[in-house]
Image 1: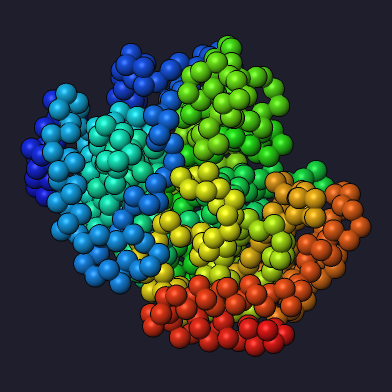
Image 2: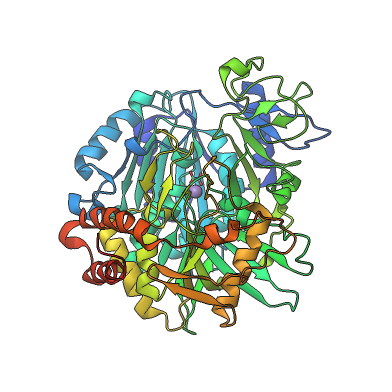
Length: 581
Ligand code: OXD
Ligand code: MN
């Protein structure tokens, strides 16, 4: 029920098409959440977890064939194929709508149609944007309540503004042969069928806040990015905000919640967001950022007291677990937890190593941001937070140093565009293969990457006090395949250097591919690294960068004439400083 005729008509049309038994307009109230949980416990969609150790926590086991994003079934449907770019699967919008119409036809018979009004970002922020998701999945409703500002206040804003992203979702029969995630950016519309998995089904997240928003951001002069946002507070009480892009399952959540090492008494990391960042130039010439989300949908395996104590602390109450394993006394369990042992695996079978890991490698937790011990009220500030540094990073076993600084905004854009990373389990494809993943947006940019790079370059003109742009690599390995850098909390040492650079007092050495810390500029006291490890981590071997730059050139040239001239010339500038091939 709404006073906005466009919204009411759309819900009516969808209901005519999908034929639900009931329609429920979500209010976002606690009683609604509790009633849905009770219903799901009844139907078996939710399993209770140990209420003494994990009050308010539930386990959802998804269909075993529906455990990750499906990039090969995800489409951007612009009227011109070239606007979607070679980085997206494309389908003609009319053909896509026709195909989806058939799938959605009568698909909600016997089910409830939920209307979820939501706001991405603080409810009173001019940087926020709203959407409405229609779904037949109560699992989606309860997750959306944790992940977004959902319900009555969002509906009021939508009715006031009159614009919203329309997302239609049905789990269908969870048949991978009848599964599509379609985006119609010109119409601010998403249609998703056949999957209940987070990235495919919680439409506020990847579909709206990245694919549709990136497209919208280009026309409106802002940036929608796959970045965490953290605040780094020094012992003097000065806080600098950093936005960092890493591909899925490369430690964004851990970095966003970092606990400083012992030597760093008085330092504090504040978490503003762990996955998505919307940034806009402010009147003061800086970039101001909000986290459009209100919760975390994090990867469970590997989350432990060593890697992310803050995450563990927020996961012992009011959290939803998807595809983790269970101990004999019904506590959630995943690989990387030192205590407990799995009794049932993620599919509910008695645990047997022969079946693989107990928890699915892409098993997840959903939890409100406010439960995180490092949560900061700055995440609710309608103005957002000012960004001092942008960090790009990938998973690279060799070549790429621990950290380097770009020479200029254009060079930073090139660093982002040249990002590559070994693939992870967050999407269904081969794991561990190096692929180009510009700005960690390969699966999420809602338009042609060439135009996106152009938009990034244009944004450099808009910000008169631009953040520094950096590239990091926590994942460098030695000849025996062992990680050289300890990572996790120790990454603070690198962030300290980055902020030092932004403030103009940390030392750096120029190299052909960027500036790296001078010996000793990164504090390694108390780390007990083997001799020479820091040298290896910070070494730039110009000859080894020649084939890398050749690959970058080949990749960027695959965008043809649309590639911005300024990016091509920046690439030539860097290449010209390397030895001849
Ligand atoms: C995520 C992803 O879920 O990037 O954040 O896959
Ligand atoms: Mn992500």
